[in-house]
Structure formats: C-alpha cells, structure tokens
Image (cartoon, rainbow, N blue to C red; front, top):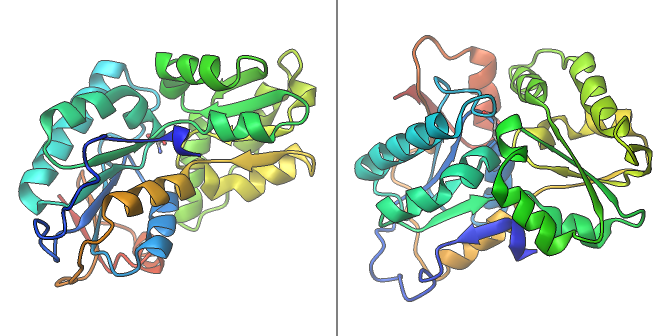
Length: 282
Ligand code: DGL
C-alpha cells in the first residue's frame, strides 16, 4: 500500500547519530484532519516527540487556489522547520500534498512524507469495479489524482466528488458539536447520483478530515460500502524513515494553530486525547 504515501527517496540511511533525540516529528494539516494520521503515528512510534501544526487561519484549503495553497504550505513549513528543527515533517493533508509536496521537498532539507489518495488499495478492494473518491475540490482536480487513476484504476470507474462541507462537519465534530447530517447526505448523494454510482462498493477518503466522520458516512452509504484512507500507510512510511533513531521527549507534545483568538476548551480536551497537552497560537 505504499502508493498512497510518498517520501523523499534518499532518506532511509543511517540517521541515528545525526538526529537529536529531542527533535520532534512535525505533523501538518490545515485543521484537525491530520489527527487521524497522528493517531496511527502514535501507535507506531509511541515515544516520538510530536508537534502538530494546523493552519487554522488558512482553513479550508480545499476551496483555495493552487497558488494560495502552495504559498501557505511552503511558507509555514519553512518557518516551522527553522524554529523546531523536526527530524521529519509529515504533511497530513491530501490537498497540501497533492499540490505542494514537491515544492516543499525542494526547499527543505528535512525528510518530508506526504499523503495522496489511496486509489491503489481501493482498486484492489473493489468487487464491483466502481470506486467513489471523496476529497476537497482542490484535491479532486489535481493531475496527481489523474495519474493515480491511470496507473492503478484504469480498468475501474473512479467517481469523484469534492465535499468541503465534510471538512466543516469533521471540525464541528471535533469541537463536540453535532455533525451536519445534510452535509453527509449531500456527499453520499453526489457520488450515488453519478452514472454507475449505485454500484460503488469502495470509497476513498481522500481528505484527512473525513475519517473523523467515517461512521456517519458509513451509515449513509449502507453496509455494502467499505472505506479506505492513507493514515496507516503514512504511519508505516514515517516509521521506516525514522527507524533506528532515539527519542527523548523534553517538553509535552504540542498543537500549534495559526490565527488568533482563544482556543475553545472542548478543542483542548480533544487534542489532549491525542496526546497534545499544550495548545498554542503561532
Ligand atoms: N485535511 C485536508 C486534506 O486532507 C483538507 C481540509 C481543508 O479543506 O482545509 O485534504
């Protein structure tokens, strides 16, 4: 399942001596979607110091232009790398990865793992040959997705839908608010109503926010649909790249949000459940 995870090829070597044990793994998303990746990274690397960065001031990315997204991602990650010297950066966001991964790797020295839609495993899973893909509007129009489709699902039907309202639904759920069932129903209907949509048996969650509302999507799609996303594969790739390194957590793991204003208590409590005990604005 390595296809939906990408990393810089030269970074496997003997990094053990070079890496400061206190150096964090930095996970990045526009919002709380990357927590679905963090959960898997934690399982794989429980001792690794973590900084989770959310570009809350830029949320949502999925309705922005490629130029806007690339500028925000490259700028913010550049500043974060200078300030925190991470051992590895994980772009836990399909939108940012499909648009800016190459650029970020070109400008940063640090290993960078990205995530792209899990089309390859979905193509292996589908029995009907019809796959649904839910992402942000920016992700589903990327040539990167066209290439994955050509490479791994050329003999399947891949039906795409950009669903920014599911990002809002996931953010709301994490704040402890009710999930907008209309947003769920609309996303399902937008796939089901496409030609052959009734035969969808596998859905790619091509936005890291969407696993947060997978239960709601599963209820709306019905029992015959299975879901696939990249979080476990990303965690495996991160683990491979830091294999053999040592860890010494010197400060509590933190979540850093761009933007201003108070961070709601409900949010802090949820973040603490993911082991992010300190929450600050940057
Ligand atoms: N979590 C992000 C992704 O994986 C996108 C959310 C947004 O629109 O900002 O694509």
